[in-house]
Figure (tube, rainbow, N blue to C red):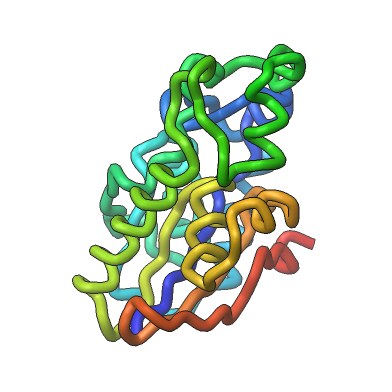
Length: 207
């Protein structure tokens, strides 16, 4: 059985400023976020993982490094998986969310992912995104069919990966909200067909 442990990166400057932060633009973690990531590592200390993977974005790698320090595994390497890159916001990436509120695509992006077409945004649509992240997860499963893997990624990646694999509708997923910064989700599978949710959006270790 593969157990996916998914941690979202810590809060960043762009998060604090209310900006789109996708697969092209990056920003630094806040100082508190480093400490939060170490707390997540302390929570996971003693759990045996076969491998550690991260999105190629710096904020995820930085979070992963701090988590491993908290686990006492500061010298362990973290693999990079391109398919775990955050949603491609195209030419909206890095902009204040409020700058695009009047766009015809804005409401569709947030409220109707099933039918979102990124003509103005020039990024990817949700169906492309979900296909990409599921493919990345399936490859990890095939390489680690009988162990735990710890993944450092993003709000949309972690939220949509877990919930689409559990069979939820895209619009319902978006309406229910995204996982929090430095949160942990755990998803289990034997065959990458049937999945069981073991933990969702846990941040108790930060309190």
